[in-house]
Length: 276
Image (cartoon, rainbow, N blue to C red; front, side):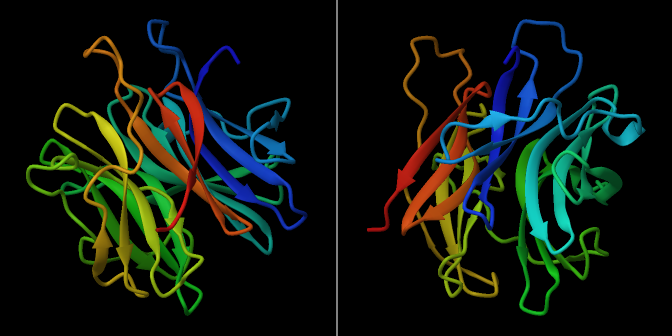
């Protein structure tokens, strides 16, 4: 609780409980020791979580994540858990999409880089995962290009690939709230014929909001996209203050859509989304 909290990844366990992995960050204004540590916790109601006694993923000792661990995304498997996360170098210059796996959230073993950065796609992070019809892996991710964040898509046979790059799933829109930056968000797949991503978009000055985009069943084309943001941060008096709402996960409970997100890169929130 001495740290700010962001990137709340929440899911439902087979026994009905809710689980969460969350990034804990050094508060703004304090000495930066790392860019994040990942903690886990459990809940009966999806709102009040009891955290474990120690973090599940910490920086190092490998160079690829010595500077911090960020943005957890959890995939439950027959053997336990696979956790994608963003690993940051010790000098905090850039990161790469990494992963850990294990039988429980307190017994995860780091397995290295899942998707490395390249000359054209730097700073790979913010995984969103969906399994393909043949049992493979469909991986959405954020990357840096041309001084902006973009969303990429790749498919592969296993958790770490090898990856086959797919066409860009969607792009920024001119003269819109998402005209410069785009970042991955959680997928709503209760209707497999029209999966929906609650994505993150921003103007060039990085004022992030949450929107939605719908795809066909194979993610080959966009079939619908919201015009206005779905979630906007509360107004602030100081225009220089952090102005961010950032989606992290979604859970469907009895037909209700719960969207978990962070505000100002420091506090967690949950929204109830209704289909019109």
